Amino acid sequence: MTLAPLPAIMIEQAVRAALLEDLGRAGDITSDSVIPAGTQAKVALVAREPGVAAGLDFCRCAFALVDPAIRFTPKLEDGARLAPGAVLAEITGPARGILTGERVALNFLGHLSGIASATRGIADAIAHTRAKISCTRKTTPGLRFAEKYAVRAGGGANHRFGLDDAILIKDNHIAIAGGVGKAVEAARAAIGHLVKIEVEVDTLTQLAEALAHNPDAVLLDNMSTTQLREAVGMIGGRAVAEASGRINAETAPAIAETGVDLISAGWLTHSAKVLDIGLDFAG
Image (cartoon, rainbow, N blue to C red):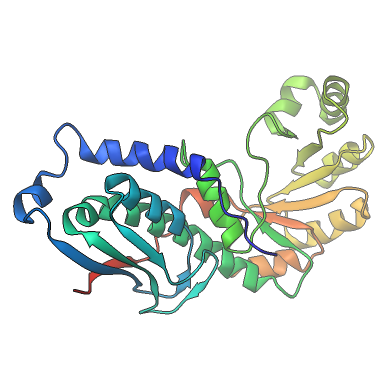
């Protein structure tokens, strides 16, 4: 499946805010002081370690907003696998502008590529199963759209984007509502026919109660692989089975092999290691 690019207006909003934060009240006083006006430069974005690219359009936008005279030429696309030394893009133009936009561009590129790389690691580990790796709402404030895009670039799937596009009934909802059944029935009575309902359960007893009310999906939280296999059997294809808790590249295969449809991990977006990508002077 081809990775659809994000609309430019979404990218520009985030990049503009990051540049304004960095430029402060006086602009880039280092580059303006050290680099003579009119100096031209050629640089390249180079991977320092293996991974997956994500965020090239954020880089392009950063340099274009700083100085439209900067030319950004991508050599790879988001979703591409990277080897150390791989050139992601070449950038030419006014040296001052290139240096001014460098950090913001690399911040987006490294962060999003790190998410894509972590996602790809799990996607590859479970490729022999039916399961897909999914992110959650545990995202950096203001960057959810970008981080979820990076998950897609890494071969993962997106969970709901916010509180308004799907119902996820969690443990505190259940406790306050007075039980799984009451919570599901109250939700179904309040929503439109296109909104799906997912219920989080911790035990097989809760799962049985949830299934009696026909949710669209069930979130099997922190269950053992033995419990997950039994849960998948109980669900019997009547709902999407999602497993969460303790998900990483080492544990994911055994969890996916239980037959669940999805495995979700919040750390993909809130704690993935930044991928080391540098800006190298080429002339």
